[in-house]
Amino acid sequence: MMKFKNTLIIFLGIIAIIFAGGTGQRMNTKTKPKQFLELHGKPIIIYTMEHFNDHELIDGIIVVCVKEWIDYCRNLVDKFHIEKVKAIIPGGSTGMLSRFEGVKKARELYPNDTICLMHDGVRPMIDHDIISRNIESVEKYGSGVTVAPAIETIAVKTDSDNKVGQIIDRSRCQMAQAPPSFRLGELYEVHKDAIDSGMNDCIDTAYLMQMKGYDVYTVEGSAENIKITTPTDFYTFRALMDIRENSQIFGV
Image (cartoon, rainbow, N blue to C red):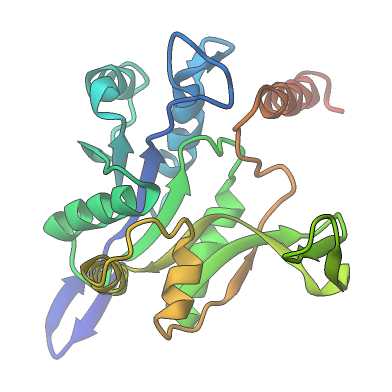
């Protein structure tokens, strides 16, 4: 994408930072992290990367990976021809510090106005439209946070054992997914400020941005945009992929 300022053409990139830092403890995987588990001969993280690699508006991808698996990840990127990957770097000791490492690396390669989509490596069911809607939201509002309607009633915990606090009207609730999307420079400044003040374990980018005074706007996600954290999630992913494959073969 580009902007015109006087007679100069300034190119503003649109990038994805994909986080592959999990170790798979909740998946009970002993041989490899969950993002590298395979379905039909392809690792989960490659399914994820392909959506961004194939999107016509995405200029580059930065992968934040478990340090010991960087070479393995790089080999996968070469094997499956994920050409838009610009860097694969190690993460930090927490999710928030890993996000900051990804943002710092992106800032070395792209200007502050770059639109940045931050996605989980284990959300392989994202699609072209969700990516496009995130880009459009950042262009229009400066932010985009992917959400899906809450399908269960939410009860707020209290300090008392087993006592239910407020029960929130489900129609007013949305479940945050990924990606959250913002301008790169703002992501950098907010994360740096928070870390400099001693905060290093905030698990949610949208919460952090809102806490620092930024307006956050929602983007329509999908119930299929699941995060693969447990064996049940993996079986759900496999079933969804089989449904898609069968619909292509049989025209269902």
